[in-house]
Length: 428
Image (tube, helix red, strand yellow):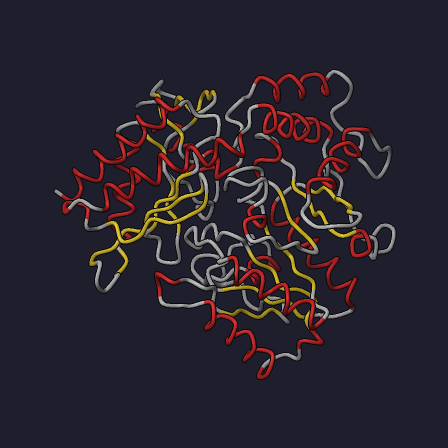
């Protein structure tokens, strides 16, 4: 029995089946954009731990910062004895959040926890209960965040009743026939039929939907939402958990629209592989909760804060925001060239921003019928050939591309070659 198979057998006996695993490949070592499994096989990583290592696996500067912090202390709890790395990282993020005025940052541990706190802060600040989210959205798997998530299977199955005062409207998606005007009309209808906007605390949106299929929110839609929020006293929460820290060719994806949010959730690549998330927001909003109302034992862990400071330095020093545009040009160009060829008529759409791209696979380009089985087979075939990719989308028929922004160009091309060869074999 090989090592991967042995570990998979142990996993099945020890870990709940409901915890999904992309492939039964067990990581043993990783460096930058490469992973080696328990059997020594090498893979090019186009997943980045679901966008969590934009600076690559084990970036030397991040590793050094964590080691230095570990020499001082690993945990004391910010609510017991505060420490400088928490304050320093908050100061940096306050200065980077789009929009004028003073900012504040709260650190927690997971993306879902950041979203939970953002909603909590919004409700406290406004004194209102309602929250509006979008179809296809993904904001987490906790009870509140799964209510915000705009997809039933597998996230909402069997967990009802869900928290109340959560409403969904269609996300604008031109490829699937939902225009900006239709989405805004649906929001207006919601306010007329289901909830008075004066009772809505926040609208939460991903500037590029992640699990929903890597659908960018059009700039004019984001600008219209900002106006709606301003008109009704609603707070705009932008979920940058997957999009943040250079992935889309801006430090934060919301910058593509020129919109300034009231609250912003961050996580994933901020920690360079170490668990940290946060809520950044306007000071007058963030200061509304009473002392002790927000926080957590491990929130803003010292080592994660040290990693976050190093990550921000790496992004600036290695110009990773600009590099995201370069990588995106290579990936997008290759995918669009493939889509022009007759043998790849299964590629229905290529979309995204910067180095956050997806291709949607379909059975027929005219009807745009999703091809989830082909997508699943492509993930498996690519892994056989040494490439790790992830699927996404409401129908599970999109392949998302999330290579580390530090990936050498030769490895990026090698990965795209594997992708093309794998798809060619499956459609032959």
